[in-house]
Length: 309
Image (cartoon, one colour):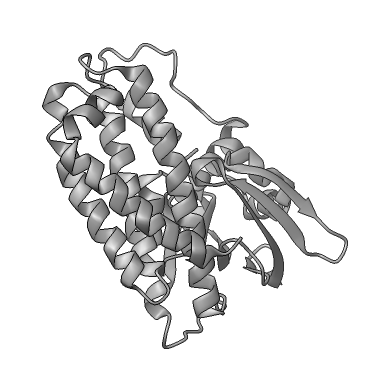
């Protein structure tokens, strides 16, 4: 498929949709099940659609405007999701509208990613190295947690990559190959699968594991995890340093956060799960337990965990 031809079609689609949202907001609102008080939002969405459509058609490659469209799609999904909680709206129709928007979002993101890759033509450098023209595109994150277990036990658990799906629910599989490389498959935004091959570039038993993704990865990444004895011999400190490059740079990061799949947040949740698995043998959940009130700490904790899955 020609992503540039698709991009041009998305530009005309954006202008057409924007015109409908501005000129027939009441009819469109009724068609997708929105109560009358929500119709006023549609012309605003329409102006944004027309602006991005015109920008897309007038751009040389369109990647920036496609990422702008994707961000707008994510905002529309959030608005429709909020409307689901209003009893005056038709939840079935809104659900169908959300499914349609999600499909367009996936197409926008795919097309933007393909054009960005063709334009940039490079991957991510290992940690500690910088390229002048893409420093702003890289998304570093550092997360730390202390586990009340001996350092050798913690290191052995982490070094067995087969354990990763136990504390990273978005991971579907990890296939360790004979040459020491591994193939990873994960669930991405809007039901997409993300795949990559990785290799260990530095390993110091009981102390450090460093890795990087190989060329062709859907999301380029590199990083290291350090293991240190906690003060007063109170377990092990795990420090994860992750450097990754989402398609679209900062725009891609913002979109990932809107979908609840920010690598930074997922790393934080994964470390919490590692701690629970090593210390108790299972991941603790509070669902089904009495909390005393509807919006309790335990309820917020479970909601926070769900957002990272």
